[in-house]
Length: 241
Ligand SMILES: [Zn+2]
Image (cartoon, rainbow, N blue to C red; front, side, top):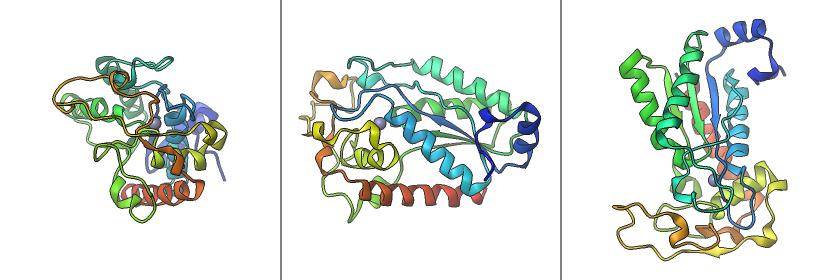
């Protein structure tokens, strides 16, 4: 099978392949703490893996990933790098503008890190308002409860938190097992600070390990099943664009 990675093509090959492709996908990751048991690049590795899988199944192409993201919540953990929303939005817009000049039919911004979603959405809205781009889509984690049902054994933290818990660790065990050390996995449900949804509270003020949920329950089989449902839904959506 031909490579779906744009970085491995010459500009002449890329010129034709972009015109023929259903979409060009930009994997968006982060450099962020993932508990005691996973490395800082988990979101980037997951974003790359999923982007490539989607590309293979939709006749699409993949750009080199962006391995930094908006990580305000985890910013106080060592080696977590947080890019401001303003800078992130500008960077994303510049990448999309370059692609539009190359006649990409659709552009998919796929984030393996939930914190990127808010600035990505702003960037895409601005591109539409300022330049009329209506072929740019944003995808990330979705349908967590639906995909987890009957599969995951632990509860989400505070109803929706899953950072480095059972779901994300299972996904990492499937995508990048070398980056996971299950001997260091913990179960932590930090006490939810009052008014957490209406004021800014960095995670390190109330969390210890950086895990939200029960990472010890993760398995590679759960990761495979979760990720397949997720990828199938996105492939279906993209093939119908
Ligand atoms: Zn993550």
